[in-house]
Amino acid sequence: MQRDNQQQPTVFVIFGAGGDLTWRKLVPALYNLYLNGDLPERLAVVGVDSKELSDQAFRRRLREGVDQFSRRGKVEGQTWPAFAARFNYLGGDFAAPQTGTALGNCLQKFDQEWGVEANRIFYLAIPPAQVEIAATQLAELGLCKDCHRDRLVVEKPFGHDLDSARALDRTLTGMFSEAQIFRIDHYLGKETVQNILAFRFANALFEPIWDRRYIDHVQITVAEKVGVGHRGGYYEHAGALRDMVQNHLLQILCLIAMEAPVSFAADEIRNKKVDVLRAIHPIRPEKVHHFAVRGQYGQGRSGGLDVPGYRQEKGVGPESCTETFAALRLFIDNWRWQGVPFYLRTGKRLADKVSQVSILFRPVPHQSFPATAVENWQPNRLVIRIQPEEGITLRIQAKQPGTRLLLGPVDMKFCYRDAFRATTPEAYETLLLDVMRGDATLFMRADQVETAWSLIAPVLDSWQAVPPGDFPDYAPGSWGPEAAAALLSQDGRNWFAPVPGDDNDEAIDDASGVR
Ligand code: BG6
Image (cartoon, rainbow, N blue to C red; front, side, top):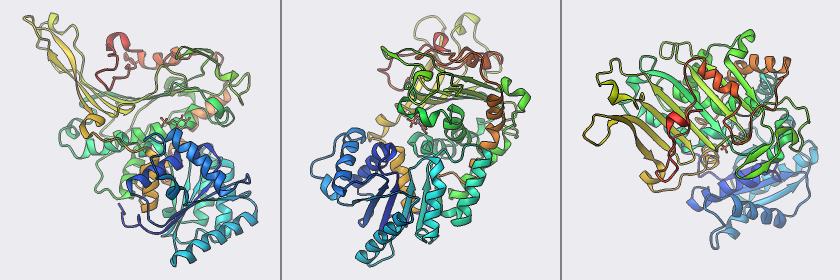
């Protein structure tokens, strides 16, 4: 990993500075990095967006965002003025050459002021359709041409399908070197997601049993309680498979399934991850219904409130066939994982906001205890809790206290908050710092993105070709459509109820909690 670049004078340009991402995520993340002393001393931020706005008004709006969304709560003491002074606003259309020229002058002004050629980071926090336009402007004006110092950050979704992702890659790599392109998947910046690598490869205990001989199956759940809210316009053209599975869930799967890397060099990790994607058994078009389930939430109640169905959300058509839930059963064709199903599910308006990976181990080969002792017996389960309450739980069997021989499950828990007594950084803090350092380990390479698209392509095509007959098919506050349960029950399995991270959380009994 390169760590030497971090303190270089840097100009951070945000295209789409008036948007939600800047307001909710990017600036609160920069503010927290600032409080930690992690930002370069000479850092300027230039926000570009179409609206005319003064620097002052821009800064005021950013402060509201920090007050609302910073993990540390409201702006601390007297820290704001010095932080905000780094922010500048440039109003204009990205596609217009005069905006590019004004930006170029602004960048030059910083170089002259500082007496150095500063690193330049161009963060494209803009809708996918505008990415190519903005990138082409930057290339034509020569603003992002130094392949060591200038970087381009591209938000997901990276393309809409395999063809458009390839076309975008061709365009971008025709203008910039691959080393300059940072494709963000914010899940990879989450602390527990990164900890999967530490857990697997810094401990000798688990790796020997991390394969088909000991593991029965793996479940990856990324559930959200919220609906699509004001993002209906975007989501209508995306759906759960594009929005979450193609990127976040498949990236988590890669970290669980990858082989041990030789080093922590960015390309070594990315090579090992892409090997997993390439080994996933392709879903044949005529078999999609055996391996994939979709769903859409209807109206109902969630969190004690009446909530609209997806089709009633703003920007969504009344007969929309877009899926707000997706589940997949995948197999990895290699020596380690042959025959082990990986079940993935994600959805909006589900029962809880929770992201967990559950690894179920095989039963003991011989049960020596009397049948009466093991009525409650369960195989070992390892749960990696990505959010909330980040940590790891290992479910083992223990003798219950008492004179009778009775076994029951107990949990060994590691909780980040208790173990380290420190708040964990937001994913965007980690990722922005990595961009400044020029470390691409946690970013997606073109081949990863394209392989992920090609994996889900048959499902997208089949769902597009055959409209769902039964949408909406799940109630808000549930765990998705019936068909998702059937995807596992046909294999004699169940989805696990999320394991609570905190002892104060309501305990969920597995036998009844499985949905
Ligand atoms: C984004 C998706 O990538 O991830 C959103 O576009 C989703 O639809 C979000 O809500 C979930 O992220 P997190 O970090 O809140 O789990």
